[in-house]
Image 1: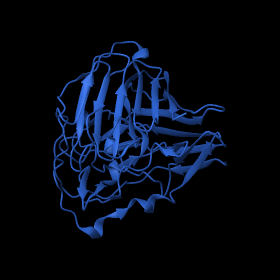
Image 2: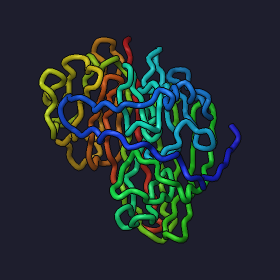
Image 3: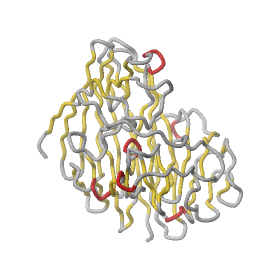
Length: 359
């Protein structure tokens, strides 16, 4: 695939209408209904033709949506360096979009006529990553702050809102190179006014001869300021409608910081088990603790016990924290990795996904 290059000096998306408050971690409970005009909803099928590269190793296939004009994702929440959707193994789609449409009139997401509608800032699928912002509080109203994978953003809210479409002041440049089994996307940003600068590369690779995908990252601080942040992968897994029969297993005793509704899901030692299908408008969500300081704790298996399909998710870095969130259309296990770089330093980290299916 030839190299592509584009400039990220754009303002981003139009402002969203005010909506209901973000759903907080806690037991299975109702998502606040947000009445939205039908004429603001764009079907997810409109994103099908967004620039992408399909990759395959003959065992697993995946679609990597590329950054740039007309991209699948143009929000200012998730890393724009590639959204990975439709990772498919033995006919099971592990990462189809979990929403049916998107609308700027929605705050985060809502159920509308039996379907999930999201704000464009949350319109991501499959493994999608988000970095914590850098310098939001110090920026002051009208000042600038940084989000890796997006660029320098203008602060125009009193409090930080990760689904607000902040104007992009400096998005740097993105380069993309690809082949049959891999895609590499690189963002380069230099912002002399703020002192921030970095080169951030992400490589999605389907390993030959294995039901396995790796996502390799390299981040180099090329500016004059330290880069201190966290990054997590929002694993939007679509293994079972309603998440029925899903289990999530860790190498440590899991502790849910907020209790689940007792009839919806339960913790059993190292495993979370869904006890029934999650209903429309419900969520099962909580911060998770119990892990230690070793990278070996970044090793989780999500499985549909009825079909045998599942995924093992591993990282090569210690865990900084974990969040767990799910609704009827997906289950998201969200492990965080800490990043602290001084000018000139580089960090490498890799996620490994093993696909499991019935024999």
